[in-house]
Amino acid sequence: MNKGYNLKTAKKVKKSQKKSSTKLNVIRELKGKTILVTGGAGSVGSVLSKKLLEYPIKSLRVLDIDENALFKLNRTLKDTRLRLLLGNILDIDRIEMAGNKVDLIIHLAAIKNIEISEFNPIEAVDVNINGTINMIKMAMKTSPKKFLNISTDKAADSTTMYGTTKLMAERLVTWAGIHIHPTTKFASARFGNVIESRGNVFEVWQEELKKGKPLSITHEKMNRYFFHVDEAVDFILKCIPLINEGEIFVPKMKAYDIKNLATKISKKQKIIGTRPGEKLSEILITKDELKRSKEKADMWIIKPRIQS
Image (cartoon, rainbow, N blue to C red; front, side, top):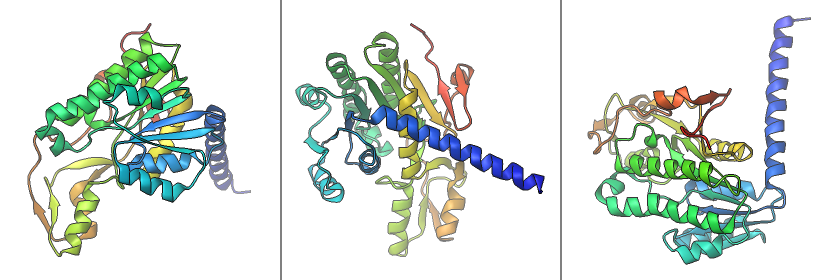
């Protein structure tokens, strides 16, 4: 019998068993639960909403400021467990109604565009920081079992307004995880760029390609971490059973050279220069965070600096 083949088969079986075990854990977490997703009609939120409805949940409340996106989501999903909530996370009364008798909150709502955030810093602070504060205060009143904040690699060693506001949101959620625990368990999930998200570089390139224009590249040495939206959603779900006391979950992602990616689409390119505060290379986790992290096969779990 071929030992090499057996070893390879054994690894596949083990990986399959681990995947199956993870899904069972998620099913246990979600069964019969009422879930609130803020920003749930957005690029990642809509895919997450669809995925959540594949589980035996009681109901799914999707809160979003975009009326048209909610309308489209409803037409796409057509599920009686879906509740469409039009509202803003800056409206405390609205989010308290949205969060009434909810078991799990997944907080996706944010201003995410780097350039928009730089030129509209007050609005970025309002939504990304004050909005998160509102969500935490709401959770303190409504006492869901768990709260997962969705963050970005731009928060690690942040140099942009967007990254800085998301770093503050992470810190706030970690604080809540330490001091509000165990009434509600809080944590954050931090990952890189989602390929299918609105306004991403691939969307820009496709538009330029259709018009016969050269592809815009900020810098020829720029590289970024990329996730497919399904991978991002799977990671979010994988984090839910692990939420305990203010952790930050960071997936092990692959960094891609932007110029190489562009070349696969078109060799016709133009350098447009980096945006304010933009780095050539992002990082997923800082050296300080790495010191207090637990490493797993597919992620790091960053522990809070101060334990309760």
